[in-house]
Picture 1 (cartoon, one colour):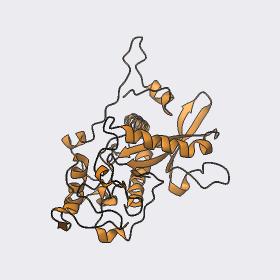
Picture 2: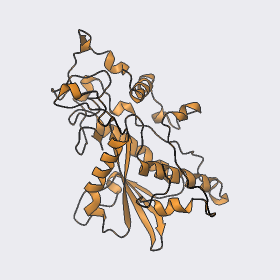
Picture 3: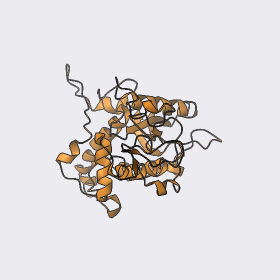
Picture 4: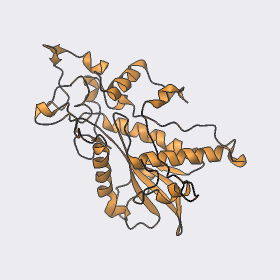
Length: 294
């Protein structure tokens, strides 16, 4: 993926990182969801540590295998027999329905968990960050707002601007179709990134009118999927943050400010895949669609 795109909300910042010499090769960004496993991943706090069952759910759902917590549920003639709390679908062993159900998916818990990690992450380079209800509203007398606001994060000829982004987690497969034979199939088999683009357009359309005329705020979508694929704008933002954090670390006056290293995070499956008895206690904060947790 091209690091600098003229339609990107981060085009000025990313362009400044390009090689300035004539004929310099344009930077490209590559994201391999499971590559971090080659290194060492240690939780920074007890709350960040995952239980073995959560690791199992993460790996199996990312790889498209049967999820142990779901495959252990009762079956009838080797077919799922446990019904979702929505009373409309059975719980398939790959988690496609529970990842797309608009009534009982636990999406709010997963979404808020991820937003809670993103706020501190962007503070490591000294940025002021607002999350959830602290984010500026999209327009006067409106309550709609993005998930995270980074103050004075962007800079152009007109001065500094705040960056507001809204997070959504989409699913790659159909899981809540009224036509059962479609469930479990890829929603876009010829373009695996299509669910990310669809979710991004949806976010932009939702906030376009509210933030378009705000002179001090730029809005962008932050989209990832349950298989750890990532939309280009979100990947650019994390790359830019990693660059700024590294620069701040090696700048003398900031050297002792933070010892935190940027870690690209994956959605905790705990918020998506729950035992059936837990479903009755969890709501869904989805803003529509059959595969969008936001």
